[in-house]
Image 1 (spheres, helix red, strand yellow):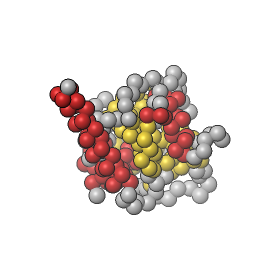
Image 2 (cartoon, one colour; image 1 turned 135 degrees about the vertical axis):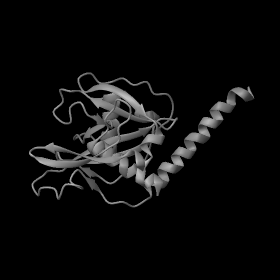
Image 3 (cartoon, helix red, strand yellow; image 1 turned 120 degrees about the horizontal axis):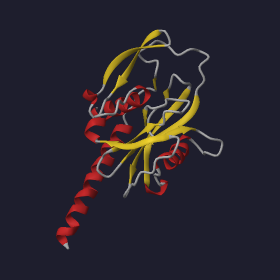
Length: 207
């Protein structure tokens, strides 16, 4: 019986250490980020619709990410954190992130411990996107939302938390050059707003 309990105790200690690291990172003061950080100031007429995304870490430290469906209006086919805009029935961005995660990947909010939020990230598509950092307590079996999510996958904590895994790239976009962060992992090209907010978290974790 002692031998059987040992792995569970080790896992509990590991998750407690992960929780402590994330809480310490959330306590580091940093300013809001933006898709315009490396590309000049945002246009004055750009809206800022509130949205919440969930940076949910599993017991082994892996982060849940999605590959968005190719037919979506915003960011089709891109790698993203589960989440979306705040609906009238949502109490706040945290509620929106939890609701969207349940809808998009089948994550039960009852298994989620919300640790805090990062400053909002303003996207080029007009959203003020607040990352909600959380731990998943217990098993998680992904259920991708048909028509919204093509794939649900995870990225190891070591990749997410290492600032050296992130770099800047440039591409032509709407007639001009635009710089953005990337953090590729295997076949997944993590870039743009998702990479930018994860880079902000990685820098806090390394502080």
